[in-house]
Length: 303
Image 1: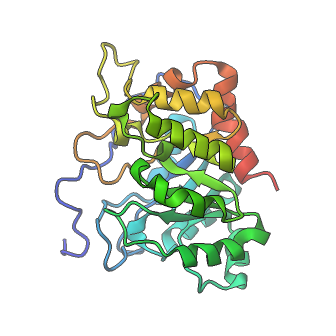
Image 2: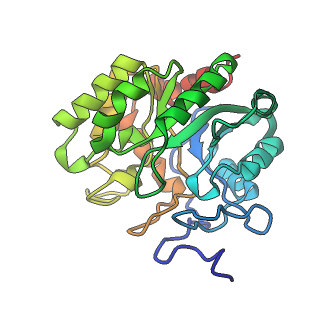
């Protein structure tokens, strides 16, 4: 294996031999946040990237979908592929109308390119503001992209850490396109779901009418997956944050596996076990139906 394709040292591989799911998902469940990586032989990672994940192909994603009982996926471009969306678009072509895509582009994209990608299932553009993962994102370029995608009805997905929201909120609130926020805005779980910081985030969501992904407890947790006895309860320190978002914005919350969980060092979740988290944050059947089916279908499939 060459240095170019070697996985970042210390980062864990995704679980291939998963348990059998103990949770039965509603018919039509959408995984609203997952990725495809490579395979590098066909879709090399971007030069200058800040990390290198292991391969996770469209066929691996298909197997995960079947194993968990997921009907549809939203595939999100990750920073390791840069603005080369070839692997994502190839996966969209493979899955057809059962998948949608969120890409990474610059202001140099043409309208004809956008229209072509729309036909292939793209519905959004992602901008990553997490400084340890990417270089600083140009506000001007984000504004230019927002202007180009507005007529297509696309949205912008933003990934940031909670401590950076103060510097971003006014800019994001004035983009003039729908916003989708990754991973609960990455709250500091140590401060608790009643913290001033998380209240500020929820007010921002209310102000902008943004959609929120209640995803990635494995990325946010401090205590780890099993802080309490019993494997049926996982990530109990993160659950109150998701519960609060679901209670306040029941029609604008989404869920995703974040498979294949790149950049993790402490532990790698079994995606079948990770489904138990849903039973904690949305125990009511109507809440679960909105979170997994109705909301993502409204955002990604209603034309």
